Length: 265
Ligand SMILES: [Zn+2]
Image (spheres, rainbow, N blue to C red):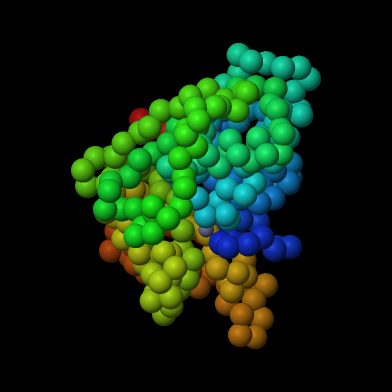
């Protein structure tokens, strides 16, 4: 199986780089999609992946650069079906609030789908919600009405510490800004390559894949000119942070890059 990176930028898409969207394609062609930023369906068409094989979509968080492409993708998947197939169920997983987002985008745009869908919401620990959470209306079940193609989803609750068990050989982690800009990264809820490396070590992953780069970094050192930096700088920082781990390696992903993933023996 392999990881296919459709978008590796943070914040907004540019002519050179699209925003977050990563595919995990299994040996039989089935696809799980992680995030669906604006323009992901265009990248999908440029890739070797078959859109019709997407069976699950996971949204990591509700920032626009991770989900503004989702309603459009759902409509395109539906348009590509020759007839209504109510036996097909697309499963979508994501944070509390995602169910309302999908339902209202589809309902307000009067979008009907040729397949059924369900949104399962991950419920975090109480102390993890932002202070102003109550100021934002996130629940959409007030009147109990579902979108015509929607099936009621589950709420998946984390443990008391606010985590779900993690057991990974390969970790795809954002590395938005370099270590010298750590304060700025933290201010915006982002990570540096060293932070990504530490997380990979903490969970015992042997391969770290970086993505979600600030637009200040061009894709290769060759592209960077004058004061402009490149992703090579972020890669070097992660490599340095992993230098004490013999079994660890790090890769800097780029748009449309495919990275093979080995199954455990
Ligand atoms: Zn982002």
